[in-house]
Amino acid sequence: MRVITGSAGGRRLLELEGLETRPTTDRVKEGVFSALQFDIEGRRVLDLFAGTGQMGIECLSRGAASAVFVDRRKDAFALVKKNLTLTNLQDRARVVHGDSLEFLAGAKESFDLVFLDPPYASGLLEQALERLTAPGFDILAPYGIIVAEHPADCRLAIPAGCRLRKTYRYGKIAVTLFRWEGNE
Image (cartoon, rainbow, N blue to C red; front, side, top):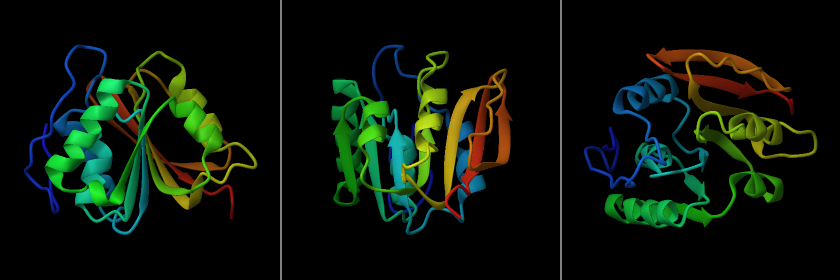
């Protein structure tokens, strides 16, 4: 697992041991960042269910203004911090150890780009989408983008206030991009 391009391009990232975390493959990551290449620079990023932090780190490497990483696992929390240090990107990052849904419930900031990659079949993806787009929450900046990774055989409902941008399929994995239009 490596950073594809930008200031930390080519750097290898540390990975979590065991099977509890399923890192996004390089093929999927390259496809996602090809689709997002003009939507990153200067943006505020939220890497929810961060795992290794590779998606947010890729954004920082490509010029994102800042990134917040959230994961409930202590080992993931520590690993994201190590990966940020390895890539020298810790100055624009904040790492939060805690429940991702609770983070959304108490968020006091908004984000331009949100990555969602919770454990499959946990129901957390649907809950996170619901919280991100709930009335009265201003977590998504105007025209913010949600990037949701999920099994290819799972079709996601379009959240209220969002427009489907596109779904990309990579074998058994799919990535769906939504654009927030709810606060126009």
